Amino acid sequence: MSFLVGQVAGQEGRGRGGRPGPARATGGVLPPAGRTGAVRAGAIRAGAIRAGATPAYAARTGATLAELLLVIAVLGALASVALAVSRPSHTTRAARAVRSALLFGRAEAMWRGAAVSVTELPGAAGLVVRAAASEAAPCGAGDELFRVSLAEHAGVRLSRGLPRGIVWLPSGSGRSCEGGGVISATLELTDGRSTVAVVVSALGRARLEPR
Image 1: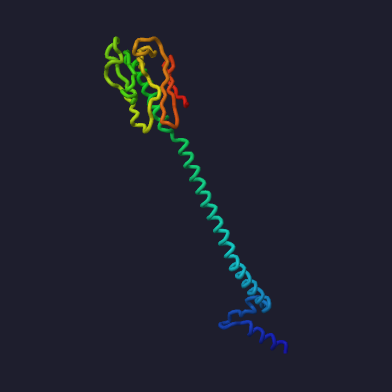
Image 2: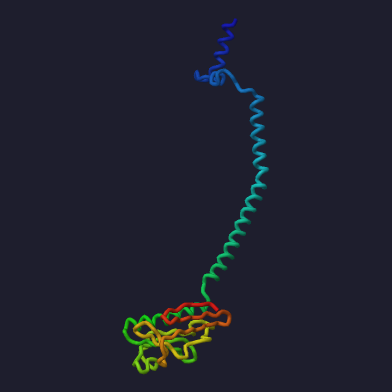
């Protein structure tokens, strides 16, 4: 009798074509039906949790985008302020041009070995650098070497200029057009809001000083 039971069990353990059935494939042990149901129920609950977490995730994503937009706005404002601070005013640019004209005239005098004058344009409209035509009248005429026109700097004017002019000598020192000795001079430019002075020392150096 036990022999027949074994034969029946062996036939049930084989599938079609002599392949092992489920019992042999799993070592003769099948998972309990209750455990399978529990696994499926757990999977359903996990799916429900993920579905329920979607609104919270969306809320967190929205807050992150709002913070990003806020940061971009703050960076834009800081960039605008930095640009306004780093960009020089019309007065400063005009003062730099005047300083360049003065130093250029001195360098030309030393390089040429002849006097070079720096005088005001009519109406205090700027400065002009000329090679002196003669030693007797160094500021009267001569070839124009460089010019600074304040019309190129909107709203800027000379509030204090060079009424006597400057004559740069080949030695690098300066004197007035009237023939005075070594001199120093101060020019002031303003646009009504800010004032910048160009100070020329007796040694021929020029510097800018905000006023």
